[in-house]
Amino acid sequence: MDSYRRLLYGRSLLVSRQLGLLACGLFALLMAAFYTNVVTLWPLPLVPSGAVLLVGLAAIEAYYNEGLLVAWLLTFVVTVPAFFFPPRGFIDGAAQPTALIAVVLAGGVAVAFGTIGFAIGVAVRHSREQHRTDRYQPSATVLPAVLLGRDDGVAMRAVLVAAGEFTVLFVTVWSGIVSLGAGLGGLPGIILLITLMTVPALLYAAHNSGLLVCWALAFAPLFGVFLARQLRFVGYPTPDQPVLYALGSGLLFSIPLGTAGFLFGVVVRRIHRQLQSPPGLNASPD
View 1 (cartoon, one colour):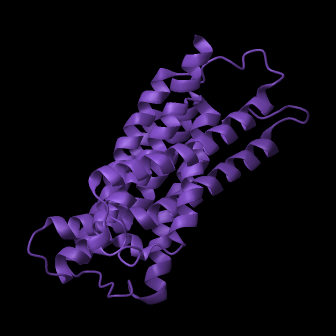
View 2 (spheres, rainbow, N blue to C red; view 1 turned 135 degrees about the horizontal axis):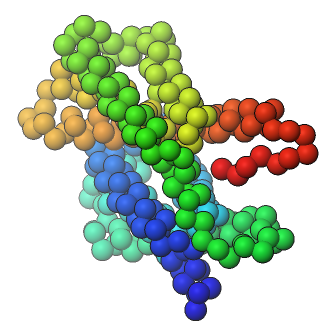
View 3 (cartoon, helix red, strand yellow; view 1 turned 60 degrees about the horizontal axis):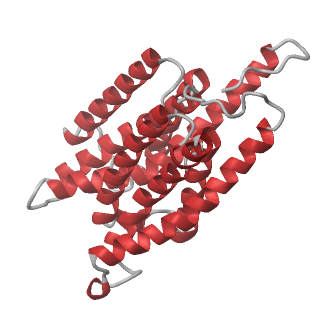
């Protein structure tokens, strides 16, 4: 019975509940992104990059906690907005699927890619744990550390830094103190903005891990710029459209940069740990 529950719900129910909350947040953000059609700004081919994202999400979840149903949930909430609000150019408005058809199609895609990613994650984990006697024990602390960080206090301070970045950039752009123009001020402005998005994420990951916090650090400055520009320079009859557009745009560009900062930070931390570790001793796991 324990193996059955572990297969479906994961090794730790605490981690599974945390991933459920993550799924709710991803669903809300992606619904905003696809509703405003900002997915047309995505620099990579949508279908291949989406497939990699779905398989990767399921594989990471399965590697750290198993839980086939949780893997399906994560891939479903990422898939369903694309079928509810397909990007213009892929399908015209007259042929847009109904809600029921969208859910069925998203469910089929989620089950397929979620199962593939789940199998990859479980296979990799089992191959690494085959000689360990505690391989069936829950790993309730590993995934929260990867998602939020090792130290909750450091994570909270990083979130406050992200809020400060958002506030400063929003006020300066909206008030006209900083003029970023249609091209974000040209190449220097783009480089500055990318630096503000990636460097704090890299430093945080190197010190405390935490992928979600890295996403927040990358998202905050870009969201502040986009929201200020939408509210200041673009006229809308209702305020929800510029907010949703800025939210979706910030999400689409900040997640890749935040993930890159997280990965580079983890690599830096592991290199530093290897250099500091005595010869012949393995570094402690993440």
